[in-house]
Image (cartoon, rainbow, N blue to C red; front, side, top):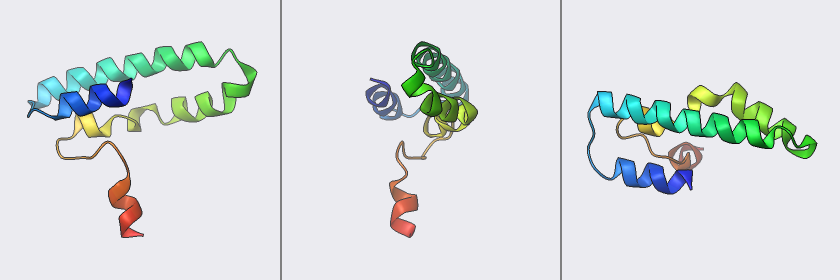
Length: 77
């Protein structure tokens, strides 16, 4: 599961280069999932949304200290 992989990766401090490499790897995995599920009509709306925002899904890997959930944003509201 992608979320487990993110949590494990973020559990140890990483360099900016390591973070960028992992970000690209995770984005590629997500693109493959999008391609797979996009062939199902009932999934196309969701896959289009995910694909349109693909650069935002793994900010928590790219930038140290960003949580993999939006809990902080929700708590601020």
